[in-house]
Length: 466
Ligand code: ADP
Image (cartoon, rainbow, N blue to C red; front, side, top):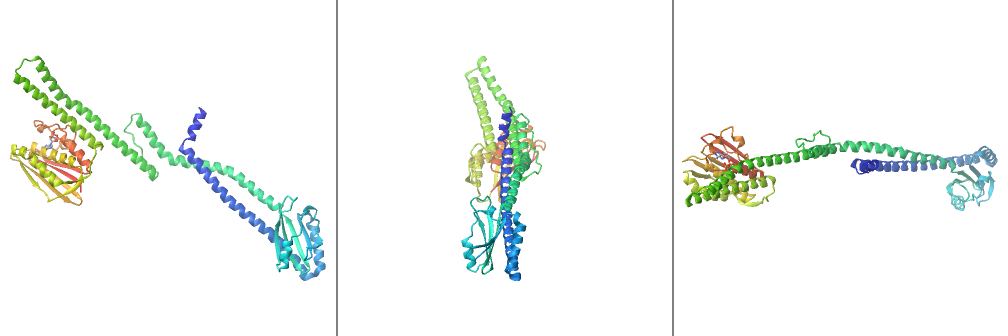
């Protein structure tokens, strides 16, 4: 159980971010501390060199002001005073002979640097060297400096103190890195938790939704742009899913309701055929009625599928050049006989040409549905006017009629599936034409509006991007 929990924790993004943060933070700190350590060690060495130089200058000054004897006595005092310390003094001849020397027991193996003497011969005032002497634990920093042409001052200091001082620093740095890692991990964990809180809320909402509460939404709290975008995208995805589910439920209800009537009628006809003893003509009529009802059923099912596919974007939406004017004129030609039969006059107010990009078949369907309604719900002697305008990159198609009109309270419902206004129920129709028209207009990224007055007529306006 515990092992599983640890395994789960190891796989969390928070844990990984924390680890990365702590790792990078510690590494950066190590780098900064190493640079600091390097500078400290440089400064320590420079201090030692300064010390050596100061001693050399002191001895040189004694020589200049007080002569060789005072130099020698100062040398003896210095040796006695400093005898405890880890250093040695020597006075040398230019060819490297030892004239005087402090106790060299602790500095066995320290030779005289030929290189340094050579450099002094070449008029160098002094030379400072770091010596690594076999058998000695610590390196030695030594100075060779000219006091008089016949006396060379040589002072060496063991770098033990320097190394000890620096090793304290080194240990301190290592010791510091451990708490630094944990502090960084703590800060990293806090930051990761804070940053991922929004993601967790989205996940929590998703879990609640998976249990059935599709109404839930993630709160947009202006945390950070990324999380707010995620929350907004998630919410709009949920809105879309919810509206699709609502649409599907409505469709199920409508299908159940609207398919029942033709099916009941078909069943009635079949029953009458079975029990009745009608004439051949009666049977032909019944068969014709059955075919009519079946056609209606097929039309309902096909239109329903068209609407659902267009709304869901499943059916391919072609992007082809389509001549709107040509399309409207051929629709008018097609409906002309029906209009004439109803004594309805078809009028057009069209520009010479207008070409837009879109799906031709869907556009045909849209125009046909609006034109068919305008004729179907018109009065004898009425008119239908189709006009097209283009302004500001928008194409405006208007289908106006002088027919029955639509009551104000019914206007908000006419685009719903299977909705039919009270006054038009006597006329043929299934109540799906405008739903399909709306779905098509949406697929074109356009809009459809309607204005109507009872007994005066209706005006459907389709606005499409050009
Ligand atoms: P259908 O025409 O098959 O009944 P539609 O979806 O095309 O279905 O139209 C829905 C309803 O809107 C129609 O039943 C009718 O009541 C009303 N309607 C549509 N167009 C018009 C119109 N031009 N004039 C009056 N009523 C209309």
